[in-house]
Length: 69
Image (cartoon, rainbow, N blue to C red; front, side, top):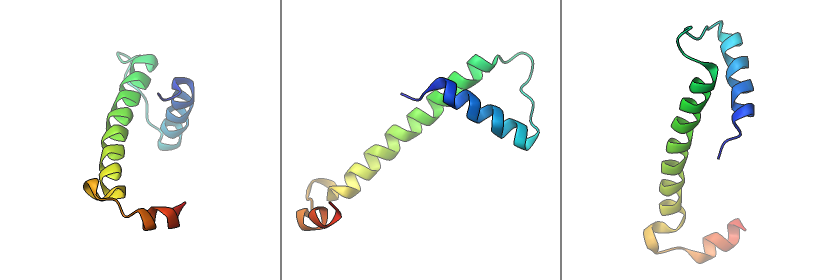
């Protein structure tokens, strides 16, 4: 789901800003993949929670939704 090259560039910039170094036994590719999986898992949970809130746990306020649109 996430664009791995974009995430890799993001991590590189953030690591540089924070003056962090990746241990030699962790490849950049593996780190990017692990970070992407972590974010995607969290993102899915965030979507589920927001879906429940937006649609009032199965009792949506359609007027409120119309106002938002």
